[in-house]
Length: 173
Image (cartoon, rainbow, N blue to C red; front, side, top):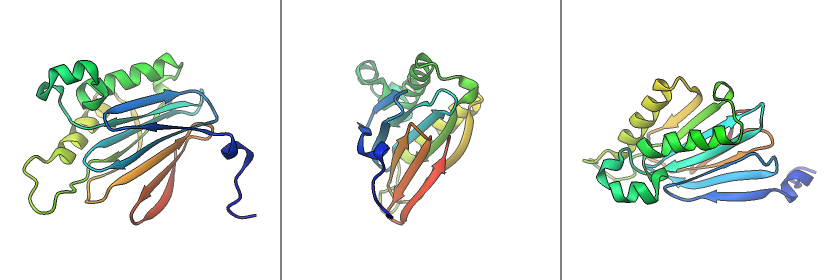
């Protein structure tokens, strides 16, 4: 029957990652989700061999704007959150060479001229980190003017990307 839930989805545990936060897991029955990525960036990483992965929902490019906040919530910033995120994945036995990444968000949701260009700066900082660290970027969908929601199914490495224009899948597994 089309649309019927599978046994795996009936028993799946959903973990919601808020703004400026991250989560990693190696539980095959876990779905990691983050909602409404506007100017924020979602970094989705998955190791298909160990079937572990995570989502980082970063908000700003540089922690220098609030060093005290970076101490208590390092995932909020690209420069402190990205190293922490990959360290956490390696702690779950992900292999750096096996990690496959999907980067999304970085939109400009402000009508007219955006003097701060947070989405662009978040995208630039994140993609520079990925390049500098020679990480395997499978797909990037950034910019534009719409928000995005993502769900990572750890059992398969499937990312479900939802926008106001519809839903599609990106395979990281």
